[in-house]
Image (cartoon, rainbow, N blue to C red):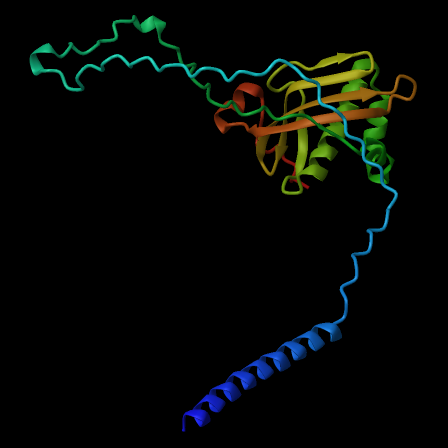
Length: 245
């Protein structure tokens, strides 16, 4: 029995050694079969050159020492006792020192302006066969009187064309103020014309041609109606016996 046990121990030791040898041989074989590591390939040269520029050496910059903050003065108490409060400040500056405000003047309506005639009608009116008597009457006048009558005729026709609501039939150029006749011009500042039995203020400026005596320019301004109470003082009548046309 003892011999058998000794042989058994020898067999176990031999088997363990044989197993270890087999494992070592297998590991060695695996290591031989693995591919060998190749050395790393050198990086390609891209041709770029790098230059290192040395920085100028200067004195070392010392950090600025931190300034100590000065302590703030103690603030007075926000609320003073009632007895120590200062009296309110009163503005004693004189009133003249204050900026003055210029009052805005009320808007004054712009006075009406003369209307310059774009067309002249006295020649056309006189050329009408019904104006034969007026043509003959003008021939009998000379100088300023003829110019005044011709401008009066132009004024009546201009009002008739500009104011269709009116039917002027008579004009008194000197009713409210004397007219001004000189050379080749006539200016009426206080004239009056009658329309439908009522009288209205009118002003006009008339220019005439020196050679032919025809009206060359005309501007006028129709005013308000003249109160009936003023008619008698200016020799204005409502009807001279002829019906308005």
